[in-house]
Length: 317
Image (cartoon, rainbow, N blue to C red):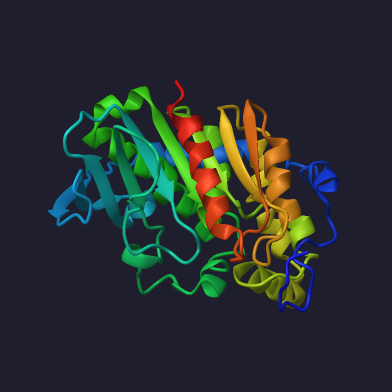
């Protein structure tokens, strides 16, 4: 057990065997049709991406500020990178955590790629007056109804419309379009990817939003605890969240997947992460992390091993 100062056990009493036995909750009868309809709306958007080159801290990579139109006319902002000296042969959409992002990630081990780093509506460069930026408030925005819940629009912003923008800028990337998402971005990716046939493979790192009925019974920190407080006040949150369960969506996800799931995580309870991995319907690989959302003595070495695993997963064929 890792030493920690939380009032609860971030393993929630699960060992690896019990984590690998977690199954997703029941699927609403109209779950797939809800998501397919939302995806169809996003594909109708004229994304009209605009790039502005900015100085890059990496000598072999061009860096651009980017904006494009997403669902309901929302202007999503972020960054795009591309190699300076080799042709673009693939595209990668990279989803951020609930802390947002302040620039591209230059350490990802994926070669010859144009990489798009979108910011979900309300967060970082896509901040706006209508949607709170604080994760504890953002996660509740529009949660009263499935058609107004912000996570549906975030799927359009950071996966579907982001992919459309990337492919409009780099049509050759259609041969190999990939996704990486961490925490919030991992959960949104699991929700969005099953309905978009353009993606070829993906990685989810400590993905959130898996198995909401279990999550609501497990204390945590951050946005997940904000949802638990809301549930205690209203008793109605599952009416919406059953349509935004990443473990339920994973049943429909058939492309090759790589998942890094943590056995100890104070922010995203591990049973929800493993529920997503366990439910995946296609080829899948698991990287078991000692901890997520928590630094420990082995974090740096574990991160290096994960990057090596990602280099193999994304570049082997």
